[in-house]
Image (cartoon, rainbow over all chains, first blue to last red; front, side, top):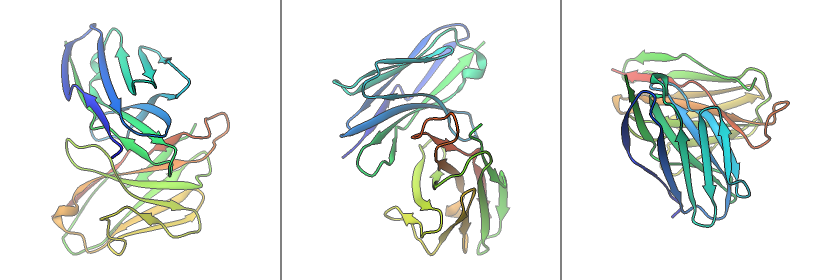
Length: 112
Length: 119
């Protein structure tokens, strides 16, 4: 069964600190992998999107990495801000049918 | 660019009534629109996929007669929850896919969501 698993489920960090979120997937064949930020009560907003040939992609303080061989991705947040508090969702698009397969998300809380 | 809007953002309705949620792509033409449902502390679950001018394709376990989807134009899709029950209370999110100018052709843009509460 195609799955996307994220860890940790939740994370609390202090403002200004860095953190890394993990995503493992078993979707095959694989088209692309996305990271979304979802604020409470809002729709997901795209942070990065990577195809299998891309190893890293940055968007401001967000840097995503992808290892298509081990089927792992990470999202690194640098110098966290209070506004980074949200759910971060790893989403994989498979080649078959093109549907997005969502991870359960990591709930990040940045404390002052 | 690539903005997707939903209306209303919040709706409360009585059990047994129907409620319609609109999803619009504001600055591009969406050939495909998706409807998701999200329960608290859970991830998005795809309910159905609709292409403009054709019938929606529903995911397994989603009642097509209860969740009516209309994609009458390239910028508008509607989801109607018929005979709503308290268990239909959820966060409904639409998404649109197309090729806005200057954007990736395989991007999928999400709306802000609609909070439905059935009393």
